[in-house]
Amino acid sequence: MPIVLYYFLAFTAINILMCWTLYLPYRVSQLHFLSVACMAIAAYFGGFAAREWDWPFVLILLVGIGIGAFVAFIPSLAIGKAPCFTVVIVGLTFIFIVKTIIENWELVGGTVGFFGIPPVEHLLPITYLLLIIVGFFIYRIDHSRLGRAASVVFVDKDVAATLGVNVKNLGMFYQIIAGAIGGMTGVLYAFLIGSLFPEFFGFHIIGALMCMLFVGGYTTMWGVVISVPILGGLPLLLPSAVASWRQVIYGVLLILIILFRPEGLISKRMLSTLKRKNKWQTAGNMGKSESRLSKELGKE
Amino acid sequence: MEVFVAQLLNGLSLGSIYVLLVTGFNLMILVARIIQFAYPHIVVLSMYACWEVLKLTNNAFLALLSCIAASVILNILSELIFRRLTNREGVDINVSFVISMGMAMVITDIMSHSLNYGFPITFPAFWVGGSLIRFGLITLSKGQIYALVGSLVTVLIFFYLLYRTKQGRVFRAMAENRYVARLIGIPIVKTSIFSYIIAGLLGGFIAILFSMLLGSASPNLGEFVALKVIAVSIVAGLGNLKGGLVCGLLLGIAEAMAMGYISGSWSNAISFIMMLMIVLIKPQGLFGTQI
Image 1 (cartoon, rainbow over the protein chains, first blue to last red):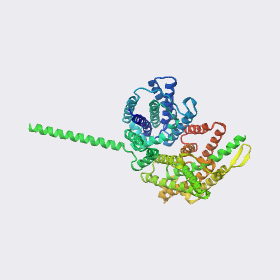
Image 2: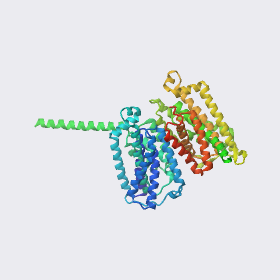
Image 3: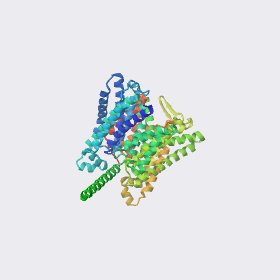
Image 4: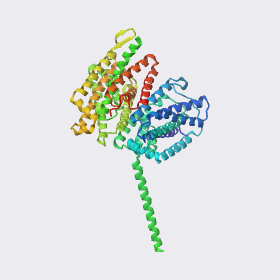
């Protein structure tokens, strides 16, 4: 497989998973950047466990998920139903603290980076298989009582509370799930790329993920499935002189989409309209075939 | 003891800049009802404008003017974007935050690509000035004195405007209740634009004082300061001007103390850990939110 295609596919899967970690807590109106910190911790743990302790990949993946969930769990006790900006600042400060620790820790390479993570066979297909499993899991959450409760919380927390929704527990649930997926993505990232740099887990990745989430649409999980390959592939298609301005492109796109299409390219309303149309068409076709059948029966 | 006093002076001068930044940030939260994450980025871009003019003309007066003009113009430009949000069903403060993150990304990338080839800028010696007072380990530079005195004067003027003038009453009325303010005849849009201009002027002064204090700037400075400003604002209580004053100064002092006694790279992490702890224990802020 050409190296460019490999990186494109790897980063597409990583970015979709990370966008979902932002999408899930945003269902309850919280911008939870802590999942990027979970990703960083799990990635460094995964790389270190594989290189130094020779742990098998499956075990590292499971522990990575656990680390992500645990790291998200502790602050979620305090910020389960905190306002959006409190959650934002907890996430951003956490990322900064984790980055500082990594940069000052010689054992994990410091600012130089962490290299020599052993490759895993057929990792790309495994990553996509995990992506499908996570996608199915999120789809099931979205179409369950939890998903409907989250939709109410997004609109009005007080109304949700009067309807019997435990806003704090719901917030904690979404934050922990996001942290677990972040941890899993971190381990996958470490093995897919083979090297780790603290600079990667900074403001740039948050900006890119925010752009992908809001351009695709934050009201449904399918938005990022469309936006990530397009926005991730854009720098590969554009000439390098233009591609180096991708943060500007992402920033401008983010502003424009919020101003002119606030719910993103794919919204819940759009999906339900499509579904309704499809239902009518199917019903219409069924109606036509029924009338044709009755006509034929009448002839007989 | 000398180290302590020296670091206290450093902390006060740095903290006074944070106070100004948090004040401008809170003004926009209260009056315009937006979270302007890119406000510190605009300040840093104004520092770049000042540096460019200094490089071209070597004229301090023109540099000062360019700094303030850049900040005011950028703030008014951002108002045009935020106004579209305001015209819809009020302002969604979360959405204003997302938009301002987009602005921050654009400003940071422009600075790291086009200005000084992305390298950090250094202000000329006459702008920064050397040490004026030296007493053992305690030194006070020209930049520090300007930062301290300038911040104090600016904060006094700002609070006079806010609490002793008619325009200030209008600002406070809008901060209290936007809809009632409209009912009693306050021009909402005009006042909102005026708050952006005030924040822009404040941003210009901050850029001047910051450049004199630090003597340098880099494209990532905006992100770094933005993180601190929003953290201080939340620790104090979102929109709480008086709380911002106290917490801004405390952050500056805590950071300087950590820098004096702990290795440089860890000092920022320490202040962030402190703020993280406060936010986790008291998510509504130490002095309570005003929005």
